[in-house]
Image (tube, rainbow, N blue to C red):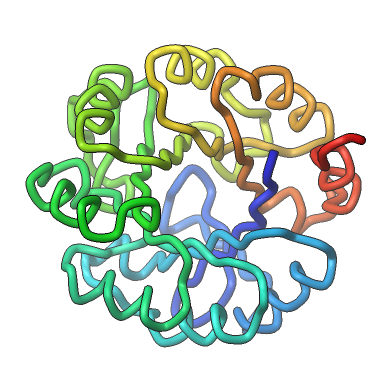
Length: 243
């Protein structure tokens, strides 16, 4: 199991939102690069970096800062937020980003998604941000009406190799992951899944490890590690392959 510390960037700063609400912002650092280096120093094997301004506006806003992060650390970085065009993907990948995450564009335009998966394969991921199992779009401000368990079948046909599932109602609330929804989704698809939303303590990591064999291969955590509720080193040790 891979632990992904989250670095959410808004107006150049590291922040966290509560339930995706852009009016409920907590600032943690003025330097995304310094935060990336900190998580790397603590042993993180990957970083999950989101352009919140891009997610809100539908146009990438913090690409240069994200490339700075990718070039400042030696661990791989995955990123998303407002990515709608091939040129955006190309710039990020050429800048050292390991994996690009599509949200709204990936849900709305399957022809585009197929094209970029065919071109970049495992370097493309799709994020399904859901409320009550229904996919949200445009920085979580709109509901698509699509059920995640139905839509994932379309993603399988396109050859997607990485899926990120976020339960919006849990995100930033530190109320625990939605294990039931994750289990249902994992049992519906063969696409490997990264879980996000609500992870707040070591017991939450244990609960997700219990369904790892269903296809959950990663865990994104943000607010809990920033506020010291979850000890990153302890989580990493728990998730490390055992001899």
